[in-house]
Amino acid sequence: MTAYRVINPATEEFLREVELADVETTDRAIAAATTAFATWRHVSPGDRARLMRRFADVVDAHIDELAALEVANAGHTISNATWEAGNVRDVIEYFAGVPERLFGRQIPVEGGMNVTFAEPLGVVGVIVPWNFPMPIAGWGFAPALAAGNTVVLKPAEITPLTAIRLGELALEAGLPEGVLTVIPGKGSVVGERFVTHPDVRKIVFTGSTEVGKRIMAGCAAQVKNVTLELGGKNANIVFDDADLAEAVAAAPGGVFDNSGQDCCSRSRLLVQRGIHAEFLAALEESVRAFTCGDPTRADTDMGPLVTAAHRDKVAGYVENAEVAFTGSCPTGPGFWFPPTVITPGDLRQADFNEEIFGPVVSVVPFDTEEEALAIANNTEYGLSGSIWTNSLDRAVRVSRGIEAGNLSVNSHSSVRYWTPFGGFKQSGLGRELGPDAVAAFTETKNVFFATRGA
Ligand code: NAP
Ligand code: MG
Image 1 (tube, rainbow, N blue to C red):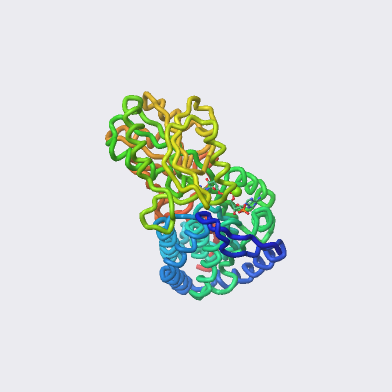
Image 2: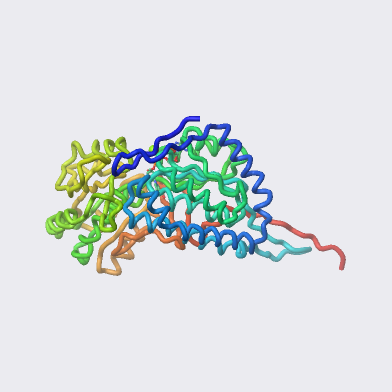
């Protein structure tokens, strides 16, 4: 087995070595999950719900520890990481309500009784990216477990620490061995094995569109069920009738939060021409006030990027672009990149079309509502977006016109664990969270019972 050396991206200090699983280890974990499924699926709804609630309580008792771990491993600010750990607790608690409510239906038929059952799929493979290691793990495993499946979970190679801890906390809460198994390792080894192993009945993948396509193609070979949460190139549209001060104040957070390493990051800022110059001037002030630095401090808005390689990739996009202004950030050690505002001369250029996944926003003027919609929709992605306007008519028209799964009006908030989340077009397939998420983790079985006799 090889090992990965986990580095703190804010300090470049060595944190820990994590063993990377090979195919044999992965197969053993899948076999254990298959065995555990035979029991877990028959645990009574009340007991399964109680175990899930206990799991949420144990996570709740470790929020500070989990948050500190994420700050160290991924460079998230302590305020974000605390929210993320709380989100995992909330998600487990929310889906703990599912086991007793896994309803089927009775459908009238002649000559007997017809009933549907929502049955678990079996072993679910959850593959997690490095940008939100905790929430994205929870969004996959919580509904899966609640519906009676068992889970094997692969964190991103570079951010495995919180997932490993969550696996330990599940056992501490009393979830039986094999119900939730965390397997650190490489995507090309552990992730691919989840896809090819016949006993893994579903893949929940969050990550890049490129890898998502590969996974979907791999799943096709076994007609394996798949949920995909992929990339985004999301618009933040500011109309001239918006509350300008509000829109300007919120814009940096909408794109630079988590250092822009967010699939929902509003990295295309479209501003109506009449307010474009005024908006840019005010934005410069707002960006300079956005603090980038020590992620352990409660008043820091933005930490480092996750690795040196990712920082260099982000820098590559900015190198030849028209930078209007930047905020500031530390020089090093650490993988720093400042909040950066670009005013692209050509909407075909890379910074405006590719997911940079860093603290970079491209600001572009538009004239009409139709033009704003055309620009916003001119992308293969369709994940999120924001609309700033004081006109209800416009808010309705534009929100209905944007091809994306998660929109917000006069806000950048698009994630709540009790509302559906997912993408249009090449941003994904299926929905996570909310009341319908469980359907992605069950098969409907229809049974007809013939009645004999009088
Ligand atoms: P990535 O390179 O696609 O990797 C995601 C996960 O897939 C990692 O665990 C990775 O393992 C694994 N993987 C890589 N190759 C694989 C393969 N051939 N088979 C199976 N698994 C494989 O994405 P990332 O760079 O970690 O994350 C950034 C991307 O995620 C961005 O595009 C972002 O937009 C997207 N994202 C989407 C959402 C959403 O909900 N829509 C949320 C967050 C992030 P390794 O770590 O070993 O490479
Ligand atoms: Mg990657």
